[in-house]
Image (cartoon, rainbow, N blue to C red; front, side):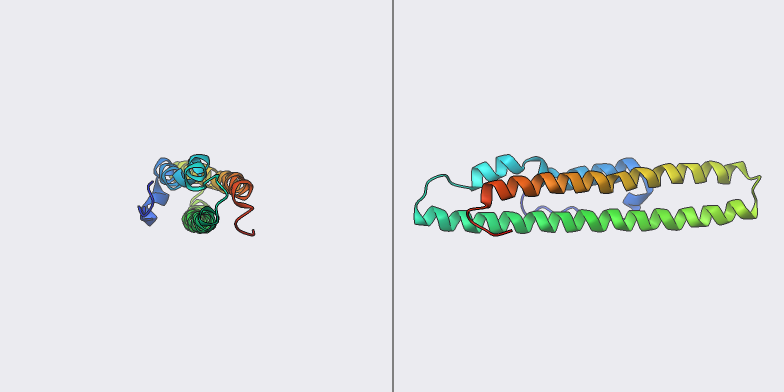
Length: 145
């Protein structure tokens, strides 16, 4: 995803786990290319102009990362809330009619989807830690974390 390009979240993404994961993958392109981005944005010379430019670039990149993290977190939390709501409804339906195999099958499918979404929170935490560590290593001279 290039700078300025924004992917819009739609609650329908929560219905399909593959679509949900693909959406998150596209939102994570900033993290996937962090080393390349830092290498192209942070100049190695020590002139005063480059120091100022590096400070601005580090701040801008940090802000972009934080914005991406918040966007992904909102997406994950919205889909988890949606999944929890559906699970609650399905559990009530199962309690009302425990012999309905279709409800049980749908409940298991939703539980699996919920677990996969919960795993994305762990993946997200790892990605954020890795990206922030790379940013801190490269920008520690220019901004405070």
